[in-house]
Structure formats: structure tokens, C-alpha cells
Length: 163
Image 1: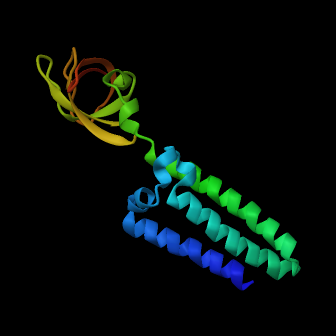
Image 2: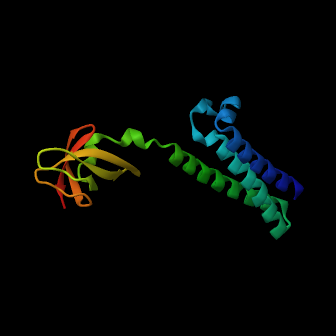
Image 3: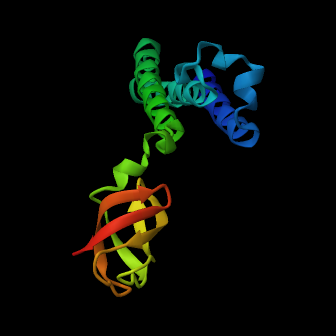
């Protein structure tokens, strides 16, 4: 049981080191050579820690080393796959998928009234980020009113239609 608990503790130490040193550990240990998150410090820490603690639980429940080892391996692999998915989700870059054309169809709120012959301001929530754009409309729109983006005029300006 001690061996399993030491492995679980080593997993926790790896997580703490990863939190403190960030991607430095990946570079020092050359785990990023494959350009794959499967061998990142977070994935290895999840595997080692879960293998240790899962094996300790299996040994405590069955008192059979083979079953404890299989239990630890299964839990370790599941934890590593979970860490892999989370790491990929966190590293996904939303900025690359955002384009000005993707604004069309989004709804927003007028924060500065839009006159019929000029620009006002509209607040949009796009891709989880609140963005503010200059906006024009064929008719005047008061602040606080909901609008729909009908066209992109420039990278910083949009055309809207009141809802």
C-alpha cells in the first residue's frame, strides 16, 4: 500500500510543480518534443497520482495486489484522458476562430444611442468575450434597446437592425 500512496503523492507533487513552474517543466523535461498534450506534465501527473491512489483503494478493498494494480491502471488512464481533454480545451485558441463576419446574426445591446445620420455604440457577447463596436442603423435607436447585427461595415463598426 505504501508504494501506491507514494505514487499518489508523487502525482500531487507534479501537479504543484506544474502550477508553480508552468510550461517550464514541459520544456526542461522535453515533454513537448512530440507536440502532443498526451505527454504533458499535467497528463503525467494525473496518471501517476490516480494510479497510486486508485491502486491504494483497490488494495484496501480487495487485499489482492493484481486487482489493485489493474484498478490503479484503469483509474490512472481515465484520469490522464480527462486531463488531456481539459488541457486541450484550455489551450484552444478562440481568437483564431473569430472573424468579423461571424458577428452577423448576433444580438447585442445599444449602450450609446444611435442617431439616424451617425454612429452609436453596441455591446456584443461573442465567443465568450464582451466586445464593443461602433454601430449605425437606418433609423434612430435609443440606448438599452436590443439590436441584431445585419452587416459588418469595418473591423470596428457594424450595421444593426432593432429587435
